[in-house]
Amino acid sequence: MNDRTAVFDKFWALAKDLCQNLLEREQAIEAALLALLAKEHLLLLGPPGTAKSLLARSICERITGAVYFERLLTRFSTPEELFGPLSLSALEQDRYQRITKGTIVEAHIAFLDEIFKANSAILNSLLSLLNERIYHEAGEGLPVPLVALIAASNETPEDDGLAALYDRFLLRVTVPCIADDDNLKRLLELEEQPMATSLALDDITAAQKEVLAIPLSDEAKDAIIAVKHDLETEGVAASDRRWRAAAKILKAKAWLEGDTSALAVHAETLVHVLWTDPAHIRLVERVVGKVANPLNLEAVELEDAAKDLYLQRPTPDAPNLTEALEPLLRQLSDIHTRLEQRIAKAPEKRSLRARQALKQVETYHRALSQLALQGISRLHMAPGAG
Image 1 (spheres, one colour):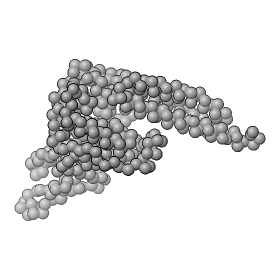
Image 2 (cartoon, rainbow, N blue to C red; image 1 turned 120 degrees about the horizontal axis):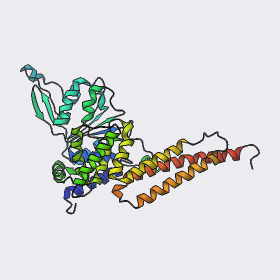
Image 3 (cartoon, rainbow, N blue to C red; image 1 turned 180 degrees about the vertical axis):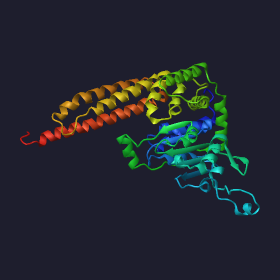
Image 4 (spheres, rainbow, N blue to C red; image 1 turned 60 degrees about the horizontal axis):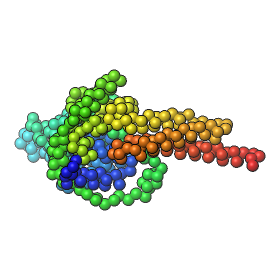
């Protein structure tokens, strides 16, 4: 974007601010910002304690004037917890009305933990709230100010009745525990940094308008079609509504990267849009990477190769442990070197996935190195050693 607008600079400052406080959450942070820009919703899938609610709360804290709502859902949650209690005074006048102050009905940013615990009493109202930004009460549709809902779950829904709710989340990101030892050390002493930037609600509205004005290039359209055909060949399909919405995400990605039009490279963000079953994430990464960013495809393949090597490790009590580990460690080092060289030649904004793969390769190498040290130690402690 040659003429970077003030709101563009604010979004970039916000992203940097969040990354300083939330380690190894770059993908989730970017997805959350894309959700704001495209006025879509985000599902974070992962175990408890991985900063999912902290991400939603941190974003809202940095939006001046935004109302935040957070709730943990259970099988026993009632509509009152989300939409407010019934007004007794209204009932006395034969009117069905809820007291919505402080509820999700008034929120700009909302976070619902264990979203798929929602029961049928909550489901219908939640669907219209997410899809149409309307809360229905007593036959009347009331517009709500919701910009984006961030939801969390440990697993995808198994109940077919929740399929419509699941589909409302255009963006889906898995959030694992921190993998890198150095980042874990940082986490042990991490103090939340003061807010360095903030957005106004008007800034978000202005950014959304700028995103809509980004043209979708022919090469971006061709990339979307190529991804669609390749995924269908692999047995993975998405609805027409989802493909249409995906175009908005490409525009938002282009805007966030400061580009004047959505290009094929921006289709890499479809990785967060096109999987339904987490088992398909690797497949989607490969298909999207081939079309949008070959470095991502190479990174996925090298990460898988590294995992295969790691899984070939001998047991700690195996004879000749150190000798058996030597070729595995050498091949992991070769994979690490190849990834480092590829990353060095790529723009930083195109190498996030490759850098994540590099960290994973380092984790595998570190684990096997520690195992080799155990083997050496065992030799020194053996009777007659030395």
